[in-house]
Amino acid sequence: MLKQIDSDISLEQMNIVVVGHVDHGKSTLIGRLMADTNSLPTGKLEQVKATCERNAKPFEYAFLLDALKDEQAQGITIDTARCFFNSSKRRYVIIDAPGHIEFLKNMITGAARAEAAFIVIDAAEGIQENSKRHGYMVSMLGISQVCVLVNKMDLKQYDEKVFNSIRTGYTEFLTRLNVYPTSFIPISAKEGVNVTTLSSNMPWYQGLTVLGQMDALNKINTRSNVAFRFPVQDIYKFTEEGDDRRIFAGTVETGKINVGDDVVFYPSLKRSTIKSVESFNAPVSLSAQDGQATGFTLKTQVYVRPGELMANASESQPNFGTRFRVNLFWMGRASMIQEKKYKLKLGAASTTAKLVHVINVLDASDLTSDQKKQQVDRHEVAECILETTKPVAFDIVGDNPYTGRLVIIDNYDIAGAGIILEKIVSEESTLKTHVQKREFEWERSAVTQEQRIAAYGHGSKFVVFTGDESSTKEAIAAGLELRLLSHGFKVYFLRTANLIKGLDIDLTIHTEIMEEHIRRLGELARILTDSGQIFITSISNLDVHDLRTLELLNKPNEIVVINVGENRFDDYDVTLSLGSDDIEESITRVCDLLKEKKVIFDYSI
Image 1 (tube, helix red, strand yellow):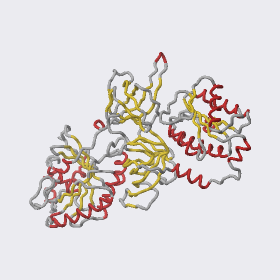
Image 2 (tube, one colour; image 1 turned 60 degrees about the horizontal axis):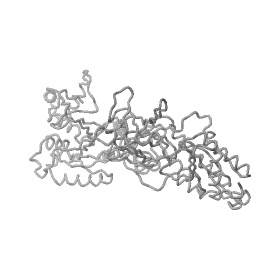
Image 3 (tube, one colour; image 1 turned 120 degrees about the vertical axis):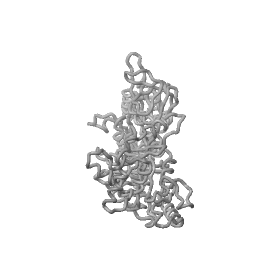
């Protein structure tokens, strides 16, 4: 509505959404709050009362909102979705949500943010279907501070039994939604009872007034006073003139960090200490804070990919994993369905995601709820379980709303936006399920592995070369293929470029393509090792999760991982580490390993 001109900007601001069934008194309550806190334009209350008297209509506080809306036609700038008033403690923005679609979309995408919800219920009519729908809406948005106002108590002679009956029934309903009300307040918005002052009409109620309850609410944390979070957007390496810096670049999402602070990267769990804060054409700084685009160098070098989340080791840590419960607002024209692959963006991270399970669906147009659907249609809000191909770092939205929001992309269009409510700890994954089903349905050859070993003179193995030294590891892998082939072994070296021919891309940036590349490679390895061959490949920029994915996809056959150059896998036991010097010597060491693994035999080479 009309923003108060004399608003004290030194007061903190809180956003509250007020919802209620038609004619349960929501507008009357808002009008009464504005009048009783002197937040109306000068003379507006008297003007509306005079208009009612001229038209022989009884005055109602809801008319104040209608009058303010009417002023829009007179060129006065107003916001029809919000109204404003002050208490001695805060500036309040009351969000009206008549258009549920836009409201829910704005809330979930972060365009708007209600820090508390007040649900209005008519004491005479009791709990209506819309009262339950609004409960669902509050639950879907993850609003933790909820107050229920039992209005029109004057129509029930301020009867405590009526109030208790509604409180008991609605509490039971909200509990099923995991919503736990901060308070229930009996009021009469029309008479001003318990709105800004307590009334002798209900001596049995000694709790807070509506305004008192608003002032007692906790303020949601702002970016500056929550834990430090820094999504790593890129990593720059310098080599000229002896400059050996590696700068981790991005924008500080929340909090503050200082030179000398210990940090942890998620989901890799790599640790180091801030050595310097780097900025372009700016004075030297010893700290960085929320909203600042900057870079950091570290005392101990760690090797992480863009998309990781850096946190201060001394503060609360983010979650990480592949499964989480979210509330998702779907905007895509095509429905969100299970088994389809989508791109998920969370901070600087980008990965492939699937819809695993739909818990509940809320139609944003009329707030009807459906617990049986297993797809999400346009303009629906779904509580569901998502699974990503690779672990991602995140915060629960109630702990940090800025790193607890995600976006879903379908066919290059933003199709959904969501808030993360819970990390799901599960040993199951769609990949494990796929491998189990694949192995169960795998039609075994009439030729056994033992017969193949006897015929070929060797066993099968999947050999993966990885590390930074691209040309060296390619040379070792190619040389290994030639040496094994010259001794009569069934061997094949797949150059990874052959899997992405025609794609001029950086796999460290296009992570979803890298994930598909790994999947194809693992499935191919399963076939070639089952055929009794020694399958060799060489890949750069692998991380631990990639290696474990290849292990899983190649089951029940074993994988051999050979690192060339500096070993970055401090949390994975590579089978063999090689330097980047003599190629022939390195090939011999790999052959010795294959002998040790009984893939090839002593007399063969």
